Length: 291
Image (tube, rainbow, N blue to C red):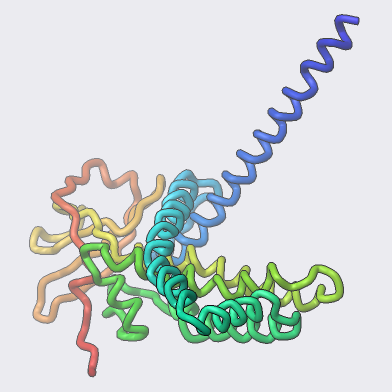
C-alpha cells in the first residue's frame, strides 16, 4: 500500500522533471543553432575563416544575445504601432467611416484561402528578394570597404551609437507579420501543399533574422592590441577572433598606401597580449559611395 502511494506521488514529479529537462534541452539547442548561424555569418562577413568545435559556449551566448535583441524589439514595435491603432479607433468614430473600416478588417480577417496563399507567398518572396537576402553577400569587411548597397544596412552597420539597430529589427519583424498571418489563417485541411509552401517561406524569413543580427554585429568594436610577435611597433593591431588553438589579427601597416592584412597566429606563441582599447574598425573603411 505504501509503495502504491509513493508511486502516485513520484509519477507527477517525474513527469514534470522530464518535461522540464526536455524544455531546457530544446531551448538550449535552439539558442545554440541561432548562435551558430549568427556567428558563422559574422565571421564570413569579416573575412575570418577559422575552424572551431560545433559545441561552443560562444554559440549559446550569441544565440541568447540574438533572442534578447528580438524580444526587446517587440515593445518598440508595439510603441510604434500604437499611433496607428489610436488613429484607427478615432476614425471609427467618424459617421459612415467606422463601418467601412470594420468591413475592411473583416474582409482581411476572413479572406478566402486562395487569397491568403497568393498574398502570403507574394509578400514573402518580395520581402526576401528585395530586403532580407542582401546580408548574405556581405563578406571580407575587414579588408574591403563596406558595400554601399543596400543603404539601410550600411547605415545601421556604421552607426556607432547603436540607436538605429532596434528600429532596423522592428522593420524585419514587421516583414514577418503578413506571411505569419497567412500561414496561421490558412485552413489545416485541404491546403497542405499551400501551408507547406508558406511554412517554408516563413522559415526562411525567420532564419534570416540571426543572419542579420550577425552581420550588424560585425561592426562591433574590436580589441586593440599593443603589439604581436613579428610586427613592427608602427603597425596597428586588432584581434578579430580567437579560439583555443589560434587567433586572427587585423594588421594595419602604415603606407603610403595604408595596407591591411589578416594574420592567423598559433595561441602557443602568444604568451602575453596587451589590450589598449576597443575601436570600431569598419568605420575606417567606409569608402566613397557615389550619389
